Image 1 (spheres, rainbow, N blue to C red):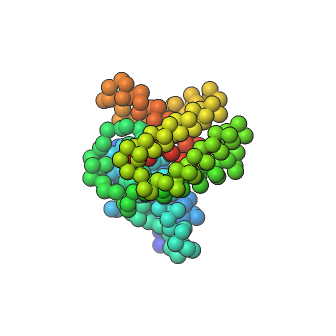
Image 2: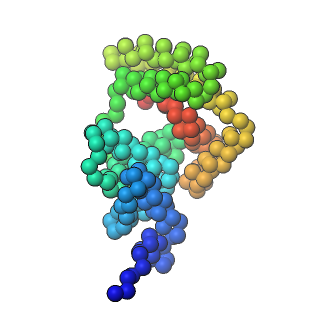
Image 3: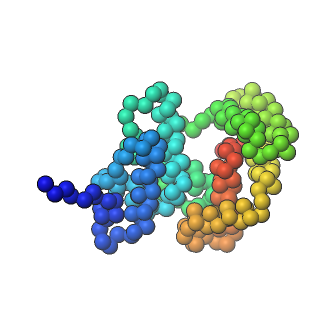
Length: 249
């Protein structure tokens, strides 16, 4: 019996569909396969429509992969895996990461974001500070920023550790003041990060930012567009050096 050729992802698209969406879905399928230790779960049918919607609504590929990573991190914490993860299980986390990315960069909300609801509760201020401390400790242990960063990381860690002890009871002006101090600490850390990369690396990252934001910033006012690019650059630097967002809102 003659065997039929395997169905490839692009053949599932109508002829008039955007080929970029096909590539986006294929990249998601490949990434999910890698996360599933090589077990291929096809992005077809309703899953294909869902991932296509991510692409149409401007969810950057890196952001979508970050949402997939978040689901897998939670999955691993539950113990040994029993079956491969389907992409549908990751949608809530992709929505959450996209909403966080949009707030961080100042990108205007899309229909996708307006329809999304937070998946789970927002961490409390003490929980946030604890997570920040863990990431800072890991960054220092792995020397991702070099030894020149140690004094600042140690200073920030000491301040955040003290803040964690009182954060649960802060209200009103005291809580706002804490938020301002955390934002200042975040800026100090990012300034150090920018000094740790070469001019060529920084320029390459700026090009990545333009590709990441795409046309979503074209309708922004010039000042808002520049702020979005700088915030997106900060996010890429955090990802490269595995650093936390210290600010809390």
